[in-house]
Length: 397
Ligand SMILES: Cc1ncc(COP(=O)(O)O)c(C=O)c1O
Image (cartoon, rainbow, N blue to C red; front, side, top):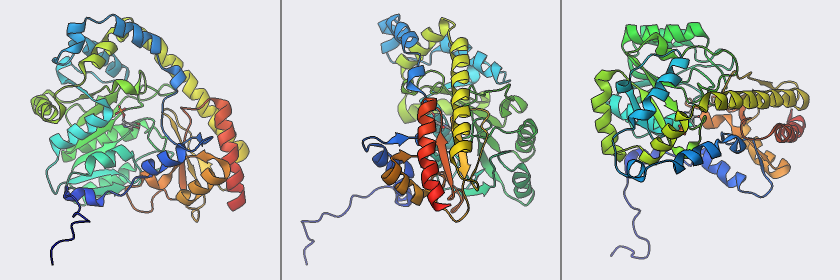
């Protein structure tokens, strides 16, 4: 029989894509586009805190040849990164800094640089969705370890797996402002992870997207304890603006040339325009004050979130106390499924959050949990959203 010409065969594509289902983020975009929806879902910086004027002035001051041409990485931006790194306890030189299209590309490029097919990769069982996305094309074996909202990744479990023969090439971790748990790792765990990476010879990908936004004193980055095996991923998205699509990685010099090859084969350059705008803006010295103001405002929003949770959520719910970043993690009784609750929250209360299962690298982890973002909404809106969620939760708990 001749093939049925009315239904063409589906177009072929890479086989790893068949394992990728629609993500909960994509689902939540549909919910968020409904009129009147109050969102505690997406992890966006507060738009009213963007340094719009400083960036516009910086853009206006650029010479068109420098900012519009294909160019090598912007050396004048590197001293600013060196200063930011020094605030995280990390010493580095200009030749170890590599600009990327946000932290997300930093992670992707490093995985491409480091992984061979069949290798093991270790991560927390609840982790940043973008890491899962970056890892997906790689044919690797994912080893998950427990984590928790109070003390973060279970380093004893990491060590036990290593001593029992696990040989990951890479461990992915967020030491500060964990997305989604909101936890910051105790100093001792940072030190131990660095020691383990040295002893067993695996790379730690330290995603520090929120590292400049610690509300208290903060602890040094993991890379401050180990310069060879810990590769640092930083971002201007949360401290300047995500639309610049500008981040950086700090790597040992011995990886720099190969990393440059991976980047060139991927997308040639980081937008020169963004690098120049950032460099000109930071050159005015405004960043210190700006970041201090961001920290203060986000700390107040975190407090507003915690006050509202204490007032409106029923007993049986518990939540993290984030020392930095954008997120509070709420645990509900085990029998509740947050993905199902999200539908009801959207339909009945017009409020949205991210269900914990969206961040699960081990099936089932976090299903009874919700991630609430406190960075984006003003305190009064946070209180309103939490009150609405509390109403729903009281009807099911
Ligand atoms: C933990 C974490 N890493 C990386 C990113 C990506 O950041 P960027 O905008 O720098 O690509 C995000 C964004 O939300 C994040 O939460």
